[in-house]
Image 1 (cartoon, rainbow, N blue to C red):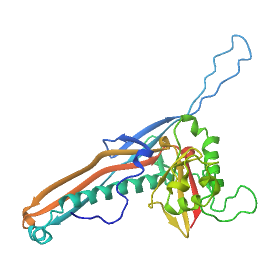
Image 2 (image 1 turned 45 degrees about the vertical axis):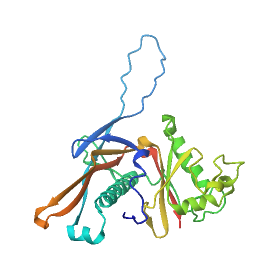
Image 3 (image 1 turned 180 degrees about the vertical axis):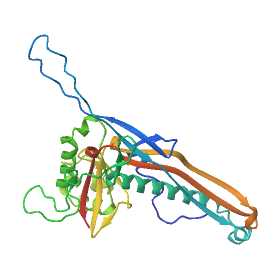
Image 4 (image 1 turned 30 degrees about the horizontal axis):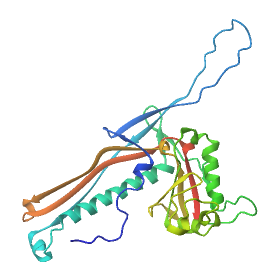
Length: 280
């Protein structure tokens, strides 16, 4: 039996976003804006003709694969069949690639317009909690704080995002989990019914569902964490993880373990995603 190295075993974020089946390289997802109500000030007035925004987002899928070979001599020397271990490792790798694509899409460039040729950058002015954010006093760089969580929730609430009834998600690394476990609000039963100090894990707080992954990007000692609701990010899947195990006659009949998947992600709504910058 092969013992795998420590690693993230597949996707952790797929269940936290809107997932759809996509059957073409490019697909388009239409959005509708906000309507307004007009005051009726006179009798028998003309019916007002109002407008409402119709916009769309383009999503592009990309294929990913991995192939591994082993021959009969290897198998005889190992005294085990590594086929299943190879296939499992490949599936986990494809799941991690899916998470990386979701993270990229969350605050990356989105493609808009009728043909998807226009670009929409992430709103770093209104949808970001700065690394030096404090609720009061002088600004100072910090890790993940309760204040930053409150500010992220405030941004989502002020955008009416939580009106969807979806549970917001907070994605962070082990370092941010450690930051939280140092705070009284997390570890005290008076604040937190989860009793995080007992099990050493934060799963929900301030209404957020916490998901830990070490795949989040970091630059110059600052980690970019994410807060969002599922409908804010779309994952299009054309082909789920598929594994093929076969002989290769061109390689002395070695066994090839081949895995592939095809998917892509895009941000559907700027208002539904918040970056939270944390010092490490």
